[in-house]
Length: 307
Image (tube, rainbow, N blue to C red; front, side, top):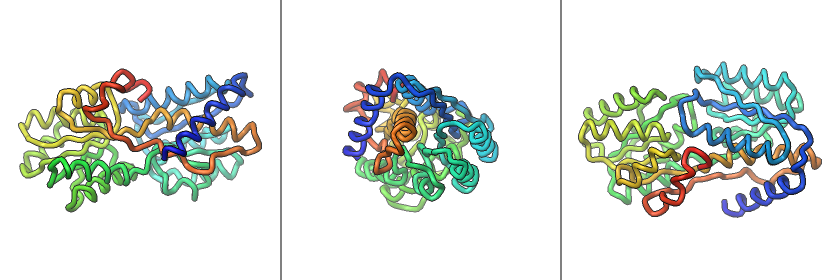
């Protein structure tokens, strides 16, 4: 992964240094956020920063309903506007695949980000920028097991999102045992209520994985309310998660460096469009990496902004 990221960074440097004047490209980014997850503003900022660096414009769209048919409609509308490229997260390949394939058939270059690594190439996307989700989950589970977890619970805020299911499945592959995953929704109040109910229903649970930062922040409230003694692990960064790690309420979080997921696709599309299809030879694996008490201080000020 290190070599891929170094190559990607070199590409970004070339694009910034040589093409800062820009060629007037217009790119559209569409993600599956409902506007409540602090993860996505960092992705958006990365994309806008890259567009500014290369003199392009970036349009950022999402549907607050979280409905996949509504997201597919956004992809179709973006394609109809004939942009120079589309950047799209891919939580449900079955629902979004036809719209992506149609855009590719119309000659629009597409890069997938965040989720959908396994389906990206078959839909015709140029490449994918994100982390291998099952591997990330397994890394979290293996570490949790080494820290004493024997009976886990995974909190999934988007039951439709195959990437989050992969995280949960990977976690239990690492910890051992059958998958124990509950749908907590994206509503912090429901996350807290459903997590508390699950912990009360099974006092033997000694490990919780929250696969989103806002989920982790709500989960710790449920853990405190129930008085449970559990190992809490998270995915992604937020100021709240950094504070939880610093004071020992969370063991670690998995960092997928979402700024790269916004920044790199714009850079790659810029190079692709202006240099006869110039393209990295591989997908860009933006993670996973661990943030824990040993390094949380170094990234705390960037959490929710550039990390």
